[in-house]
Amino acid sequence: MSAEVLQRVVEYVAQAVRRIEIRRVVFVLHGGEPTLAKASAVRAFCRAARSGLAGRADVSFAVQTNAVRIRHEWIELIRDESMSIGISVDGDRRSNDLHRVDHQGRGSYDRIKASIATLKEELPNWREQLGGIVVLDEHFAGLPAYSAMVDDLGFPRVKFLFPDACHDDQSIDTTQLTLRLIEVFDHWLVHDQRSVRINLFTNAIRRMLCAPLRPERVQSEFTLGVAILSDGTVQIADEFMSLQQWFSRQKSLSIFDSTFFDWLSQPQVSEICRASMVIPNPCRDCKFALSCAGGEVPSRYSDGRGFDNASLYCSSLYALHAHIAQRVLEGQEMLGRIESRS
Ligand code: SF4
Image (cartoon, rainbow, N blue to C red; front, side, top):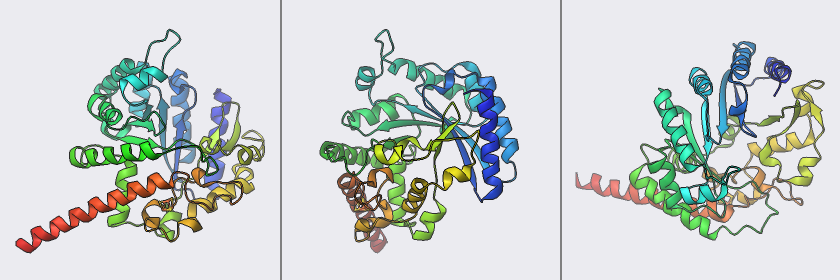
């Protein structure tokens, strides 16, 4: 991304936060390999963004990298700006090296491991900054993948992502995935729940125990992603790309000759905002509506009903939430027995 585009990004976002209340802005650098950009240019952008939005919104930065090779100036930048780092790994060494190879056919697992070791040495707050990303696709190996991420690579946070797909895409069979996810949950609960953060699990437990997703909470937790491409094109975030026809209907806008409000006023963006603030009608009678809330917004979309569907991954989500609820109940019963004896 050129210096001209980076400068305009700051003006574009600053104009938005001056006009509407946006509490937090997170600039996520991703797509291609962001750490190939000049660290000095990104550092200048971070400074300009902090100063341009000062007093109006909390500003933070994140970078998604393959971590095959992170140059020292980038590690300094990540440390100085307290950037979050998301590292994508395809599970265990075997699966990763099958799918992530360089042009010489070499797998990336060992180089990722070396980069993580360096990051841990160089970043005093690595526990807060470092996280691994695993896509829950047909290659997800369950426990071997989890063990590689946590025991071997040593991630303190793991983000499990269902593949980007819409409700209409019924070709995905999630039976094996569900069993593996439940197996991973039990292992994590026994061994790692204090030391490793997995939002898919902790959010479900938290919402079941003490913080159900009430409508007003859903509205206040509402996050809207905007993608700005290297040529200045501004569009709906990438996770909606799998909704091909719907995605292609958005306007062609550039940060150079439009405002954030032009982007925000498109019907597709209004649809995303509405869908993010409500639990879909088919989920209202589900006993996990206040902990699952219909899953991720893109996975709810169908051509016939828009976003008013349960998630494409409903069967996995239902089974996972039912399993977590069972474990929570067992824990409560055990505590009750201990209390009654004392
Ligand atoms: S488990 Fe299924 S029906 Fe229940 S809230 Fe989640 S997506 Fe909706």
